[in-house]
Every structure is written in C-alpha cells, then in structure tokens.
Amino acid sequence: MPMKQVPQPISIFEKGSPGRMGANLPETDAPEVDLQAALGDLRDDLHLPELGELEVLRHFTNLSHINYGIETGFYPLGSCTMKYNPKINEATAGLPGFRAIHPMQPVETAPGAFEVLAQVQEILCEVAGFDEITLQPLAGAHGELTCLMLIKAYHDSRGEGAQRKYVLIPDSAHGTNPASAAACGYEVKSVPTDAHGNTDLEALRGMVNNEVAALMITNPSTLGLFEPNIKEICDLLHSVGAQVFCDGANMNAMVGTTRPGDHGFDCMHFNLHKTFSTPHGGGGPGCGAIGLMKHLEPFLPIPVIRRASNGKVQLETARPLSIGRVSAFYGQFLMEVRALTYLLAYGRQKMRNISRFAVLNANYVKARLRDVLPAAHDRHCMHECVLTATRYKKGGVRALDISKRLIDYGFHPPTNYFPLIVPEAIMIEPTETETKETLDAFCDAMIAICKEAEESPELLHGAPSTQIVGRLDEAAAVKNLDVRWIHPSRREKAPVSG
Ligand SMILES: *Cc1c(COP(=O)(O)O)cnc(C)c1O
Image 1 (spheres, rainbow, N blue to C red):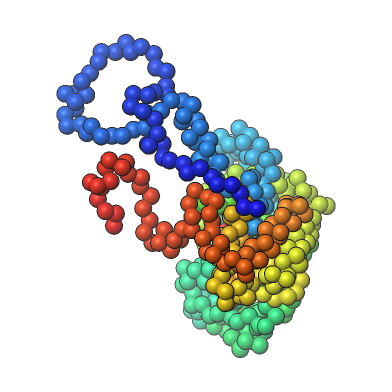
Image 2: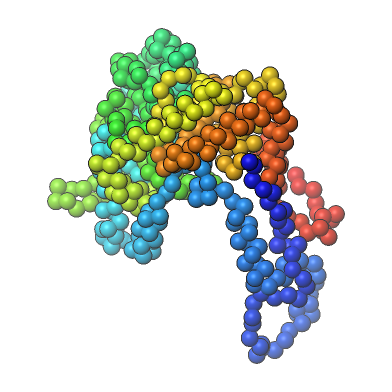
C-alpha cells in the first residue's frame, strides 16, 4: 500500500508571530540607539521570522524528515552505486589529526596524512591491477579528463600528437565520456552496440586506425553487462598504437574478483565515492582517482606521492614530462581517509564479497521482475540490471510514470532513460548492502505498479500523490531556475525573474 499523506510544510517565514523570540538575551547595559535616526532610510518590511526555540527546532526537524536518503530507505539508482557508507568511515575522517589538517602546512608536519594517501594508492593498485595511482582528480569526470590528458601527453611524446584526432566511445557510454574527450580537444566517434549488448566488434574494426588516440569503454558496460571481448578489444586498439581507457565507475562489479589492469587497459578512473563508500550526491564531494600503467607514469600529475625504499613517503615534484597539477593539493583528503577505512575494514580476504553480493542482488532483482519488466538483454548481468518498460507504452504508461509511482510506495526511483540505446529504460543497481527482505519489498512494489499500469494507468500519471509536491516539470525546473522565496505581502512588487 502507498504511504500515508505527508502534511504540507510551510516556510519558516510564514510561521511565528510578531515579537516572539527564540533567544533568551540578558538585560542590555548599552545605551539605546534610534537606528532610523542614526542610519537614515531603513526599510520597515524586512520580514524576519519571529519564532520560539521549540517552533524552530520542530520546523527544521520536520523538514529533515522529508528528505530521502540511503539512511532512510532503499536507493536503487542505477550507475550511481548508492551503497551504505559505514559509520566507522566518518569516525576516522573526524579524528582531529585528519580533520584539522591544513593543506598549506609544511609537508614534514603531516607524515600521517601522506601515509594515508600512499596506502590508498597501494591498495588501489593491487585491487585494480595498475602500476600507479594518483588521487588528485576530484570526480569521476575529472578522472576521465586526467586520463585523456595523460594519453595526449603520451602520444605527443612519441611525435604522434597531431595525427591522433579521434576518441572512440560506445553508444551506451555515460555522457561524461564524450564531454571529457571534447574538453581534451578530441573528436568523438560513436561505436555501436551489437544485438547481445556487447561492443560491435566488426564495426570497431572498421573504425580503428592510426588516427585514433584512444577508446573510452565502460566495463561492465552501462547495460550492466561484462564485455566478453575486452582483451581482444584492447589488443585491437594497441595494434594501431592507440590507448584504452576504462570508465571504472562500475568497479563495484569487479572488486576482489577480477582486475581491469589484467584485461589490457592502459588507464582507468575509479569513483571512490561510488565503489569505496564515501558519501555522494547533490554534487559532491567526489574522488576520481586514476590508475595507469608504467608507460603513462612519466606524465603523472605532480606532486607524485611515492614510498621510497626506506619505507618513507615522499613527494616528487621535479618531473619534466608531468601534465602538471589537476587540483590544488592532493585530492579530497577526507574522502581518502574514508576510502582507506573502508578498504581496510574489508581486507584482502573479504573484499570479493563486495562484487559477489552486488552481482547476486542485481541478478535476483532482474529474475524477480522478469515477467513484468524484461531485461533489455536477457543474460547474466553484473552489479546492475537494465530493464525495459516498452510493453506499457501502448497503454500510455512510460518508464518515468513507473518510477514516479514508486515514490508513493516509499522507494527512491531507479535511473530512467539511461543508457540512451534502451527504449523506456529502467536501470536498477541494488548494491551489496541490501538484504533479501528489502529487495523483495522493492520487487513486490514494482510488480504491483506494473499491474496498476495495466489496470489503472491514471494512478501512475498522477504519481507521486503522497508527497509534499506532485509531479514536477523537471525540464522547466532546470531551465527556469528560481529558488527565491518571497513573502506574500511583497510578491506583487517583486521583479519578475529573468
Ligand atoms: C558516475 C559515472 C561517471 C562520472 O562520475 P562523476 O563522479 O559523477 O563525475 C562516469 N561514468 C559512469 C558510468 C558513471 O556511472
């Protein structure tokens, strides 16, 4: 059954009463000043809220309860890896020695911080099978860009920079991939996906030549499918001197089980804020660490953080071929602390449970929903499954209607209409941290909604109906951004936003 109605909150400016106070101030011992006389033309309609302490407390506590987050419910947003972030990560990130550190303090006063960075690098090297790691990039997309800058510097160093103009990207890719390639000055060519959901090898063979700088490929793909020809694809690109970048946002499917470095990739970005459980959403902060092979090492961003043979961690800055810095200091330091906590808490032995349970959960959801929402490609999926809602379209129900109705059942919607090549796509990533009970409750809701889609589609068109706002015009919200609140008495006078 859908949840019960949430009361409509009003803004704090509409609450309270003139003269009411939340603070208990002592008697004033300073002379009174007539502000109007002292300062001149003061406005008399400031409309600051006047409330008691309890009213303020209740107002903000109730607002916080309207929020939906991973700590209040299941968050199946595909491609985002919304796993639980263990609280111990926050405990270590809050240790005074980490929290109170300043990026400008002399390097020799922060050996513990550099030890953290070195350890994260060493563990990520081992987990993903690369020779080097840098933690500087501040988001996944920033990691993509950094990898392309390394690739460009590599081609330049071989005198092939001008000749290599193209970056090949499968048509299932995340939008950041072509954006990063364009930002790095490359022209993008789109590689088709074949009928099984793999990269179309024949088409790729026709596109690969010595004008190609790199292939950017996501594995497992955004279809949630492991690319079975990945070694062959890497060999093909290398045979013409091109490089292969792995979009590693889907590393959650591989942690502890298989290593992209062993598949033939030259470099990869990690999303520490997805795979290694540092909180994300709402725009950050992120950490897009990258891994790379030896031949790209001369171009690493400075400073390079490296453990010397005596075990001490050192910073290298005299590196003539470096692409320079890609962020002001050393990356999102407290995210590295959280990631290290997470990595050490799992340890080498248990780490493979991350990918095993993530893959198991996604296949479970896919199997339970098979009769109402078939998979776009009916084969074993990795950590997420991409389903299609095309069968409801003739009755006027779109994938978005199903997702919005899910809100009425108390769940965050999955990802819609991505990847772009799947019609009416619903992309679900349960992650390893959810129980079978939660997945069953979610699948029961999805099955009930699909029944509604056939019997009473109007319920879906009007969804959500249990929230403080109904169906929002998301395009208009982005295009006509206006986040001001204006007091009712001043709305007439307010200038129209442009
Ligand atoms: C999230 C994601 C990215 C981009 O990561 P950001 O940290 O959001 O910049 C790139 N590719 C894929 C497949 C992703 O899921």
